[in-house]
Length: 310
Image 1 (tube, helix red, strand yellow):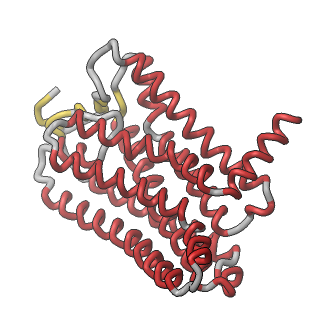
Image 2: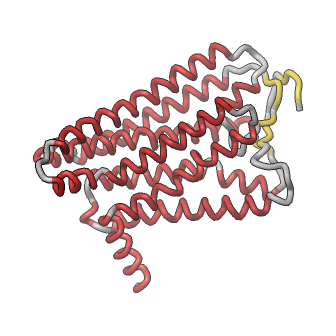
C-alpha cells in the first residue's frame, strides 16, 4: 500500500519472512524463547525475594532488571505469535505507538539499571566500609524510580516525534514490531528535523549511561590494581563478572543492530538483526547471572527444592 496517506488507522508488520511454510517454525521458536525468557527471569525474581540473604542492593537491582526484561520482550513476541497464528499482520495506529513507546521504555530502563548496578559495584569495591550507609534502601528505591522516570521521558519524546508526522507514504513496516526509525522512514513529510532531534536525544540518552558505566569500572579497576595479592584482586573483580558480562551482551547486541541497520540496505536483514537485541539478550541475562553467581545458584536450588517438596 503506497501513496501519501494523510489518515492512517493501521500498519502492517511484515515480520521476518513471507514464506508460509516457515511461519509454524518461527512461531514455535519464538514461543519457546519467550517462555524461557519469562521463566528464567521470573525464577531469579522469586529466588531473590524468597532468600533473605539476597535482600541486598545488588540483588534488588537485579530483580528489577529481570522484571524490565520480562516487560521488554512481552511488548513484541506475543503480538508476533498472535499475528502468525491469526495470519494477520495488522496493528492499529494506537497499538503501534503503544508498542513503540513501551519497547523504548523498558529497553532504556535496562540501560539505566545496568548503570545503577555499575554504581553499586563501584561503591561496594571502592568504598566497602561505607557501602551499607551509602546504598541504603531509600537511595536504592530512588535510583530505580529515577531509572523508570527517565526511561518514560525518553519513550514519550519518541512518541511525540512520531505523533507530529502528518502523513505516511507507506503503511508496511519491515519488521515484527513498530520500530521508530522505520516509522520515520515511512513518513512522506520532511523528517530531517525529527531525525536530528531523535539522534541528539538518542546520543544523549546513550552517552550518559555508558559514561556512568565506564567511569564506575575505571574507578573499580584502579581500586583493584591497588590490592597487593592476586587472590584479592580476583575476588574483588569476580563480584563484577556477571554484571560486566550482561553489559557487554546488552551493548554488543545493540551496537550490532545499529551497525546492521546502518550498513545493510535490506529491511529484512535489519529485522533479523533486531532479534538479537529484543529477544536474545533478555533470554540470556538470567543464564549469565545464574551461571556466574553462587548466591543466585544457591537461592534457585533452595527455592526449587522447597517448591518440589511442597
